[in-house]
Length: 110
Image (cartoon, rainbow, N blue to C red; front, side, top):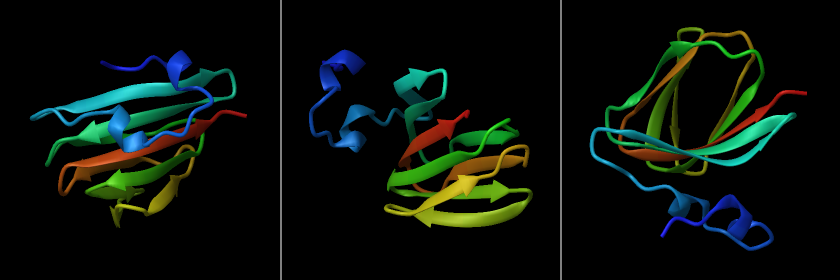
């Protein structure tokens, strides 16, 4: 059973266990949403990704499992479990799962 955000507050969590892989899919689960930003978990099956886009705010990716290729302004970055990168605001970025992977995305608006 999927726990609601209200039931996970104030307890230690294994973030990776809060989102599951699904074949040929990208799954997301918002953990925190507020005026100042969001914290979202993602699970990507192998070869799944997000096409190139921009965001108005910096966004930090923390890889929780697997590996991913993240391109920022056409420059590729290969990340694996335990690594992170900050995608700068207004710079085009995309990502593609090299192996299935999970990430935590932190977006701060202010």
